[in-house]
Amino acid sequence: MAIQYLSGKVEGIMATESIGLGDLIIPHQVIGVAREVNIPLLDEVIWDGILGLAYPNKNLRKQNIKPLFDNIISQNLLKNRGEANQFAYYLGHDIGSITFGGADMKFKNDINEEFKWAPITEKNYWTITLLDIKKYSPFKKNNPDMVEDALCPNGCKSIVDTGTYLIYGPSDQLQTFLSDMTIKNCEDKYKLPNLGFMFKGFTKEGKDTAFELILTPDDYVLEFEVDGKNDCVVGIGSDNEDSGWTLGQVFLKAYYTVFDRENETIGFVKSNPNPHELAKKPSSIQNLHSQNGLFLNNNAAKMNENNNIGTSINSMGNPLGNTGGNIWDSQPQTLPNGPIKAEESTFLGNYFK
Image (cartoon, rainbow, N blue to C red; front, side, top):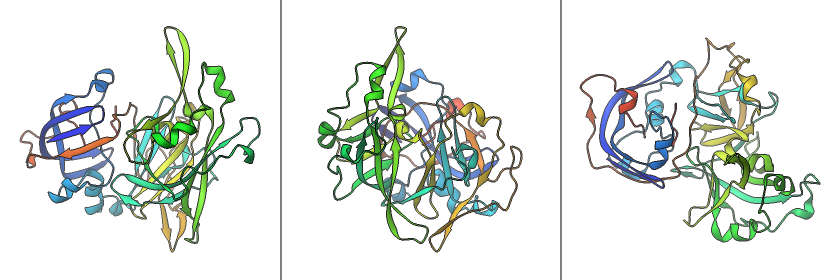
């Protein structure tokens, strides 16, 4: 087994194990056991493994190897619990959570706000259609005079990727777009525009539409400390690969995101910005599903921290970057000595603490 990331490489063997996610057990799961990890970024963090949640790639399909979430789907592990084939991703400033089987409503900024849904256009990465990115004046909300020509007049491929940190776009598009968005210090960020990301979506009636998600400078400017001084950079970078746009953690911190394999959609809603208040709230995990294009919330059960619909795992960590091509050169093995220890295992985008 050899897996090439932008930031390094992992090599080892494949094996079969039972994987536990909270109280959800996934038997007969093929995993990668890392014998060699050459990813310098991981030297700086505490981590147990990597859990890939994208669609299976061509090499996996050829060998009939199911990634973890596909294995969950094929065995009806969530369905048998009355839950949905969905997972939801929350990333705060200092805490994070991933929920399997639905979405936890406490991570929404406004409990009454509805998710906005974008259809999946390619089944490899979680890919949706980006129609345009607009700039709005920081002094006049949604000032149409600030809107530039459409970046994607025919639509751009956009990957929503929890394993990527920044927002990346094609270098030819970003060269002009970012030319007036440079900052010298953290105070300059308040001179930057709000950014409106326009996506292809659909209405409750199932009709095509478009919706916009706004990022403020507080969302897309990264602030960090260097030699005791605060410094800021714009968290948007150029990608020389012809892969369209990649919306990483800089984008996802602003929006609680549901990845829905049942309906082949991604849902977005504004995130709760106060992570310290989240610990005081009970979990309210709901299945989000559609019937004839109408999205409904399943409120049949009362939920609290000890009786949840869905399985929730708190997580923290930094990204590895986009995943490169996977090369599988060994057949799965069953580990002889029972469950593997965390320090021995590497799961095949996100990694948990």
